[in-house]
Length: 439
Image (tube, rainbow, N blue to C red):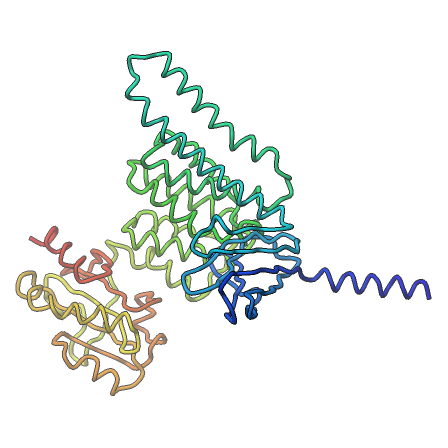
């Protein structure tokens, strides 16, 4: 009987430990849905949702095994960050127009986080103020010495604060990430001399660590680092170092590695950092330990098979004519479909430039449709005067596979010899390239 009681007590304790409670009160928010969202890498995940009662009170649950940052979504555009790490705690917000009235009770993690952010902001404001005064005291060495001593003192404030925190707390991990991200942003204007130091801190990050995965800072960290280094003379060296470091840290998680690589690839492409996207693509293609799925293989194959300077595959346009038969000085191959919303926005823009490109640069457009219905295809192309083809096989079309197309719209600008010149993303970019290279 005693053994049975022990078993039952253990079972009850284990069951209770499966989740923790976040209670709260938001003044004036009654009968409204409250959603608790966590993070899984680049994605948000819903942990729980509830509805405030007539007094603005609510309760939310979160899993015991979730250690990380989360968002409480209150109203559209109104969110607060909370840290979750095995605590039952309360959050009260008496005035939603001011974060000063936001209070956490029974939560070491969130009180520490709140204090850490406040301390960071105050020290940064003081440092900025002192730094702005220094030029006015060039001829007064005693005062400059005083101000520099104050700056050195301020530089130790955050370090001392972090050193005193519980080493197992999530707040310590999260604050270090947040400070790194903000310091990188500030380095562009205030502290350019710190970029090398901050770069080394970034390269040490483990993007596969559970604390990082649940931080919600994946995107902010990646975007910030790219922004900071992209305009430097050694930008590609710094970007490639980051790419290699991130991919290495994700080596044991193939799925996450492919998703993060895809995200970085798209950011590099969007910012015209083509050498960085090429380096990333080749790293992924040559990685023997990462089995790429069909989507990602097509994405990265562009830089092996469809790189600038490579000869584009031929396309049969009709019984008597192929892409290679066209004698135009330039050829723009466009992949799209009527069901692709971005195509319905971007491809009609090409029509506005088409006649000018044809007259001025001897350019012809070949549109390859991924439509599956004949009527949809015909309705979509009826106002386009260029060459259009469709085999109604969508993603299974041999032409789509030959060109490693993974998304629509996709465009390739070719020269007279069918050599790929550029993979443009808009009509404006095509015009700019032609103005620069085709005169």
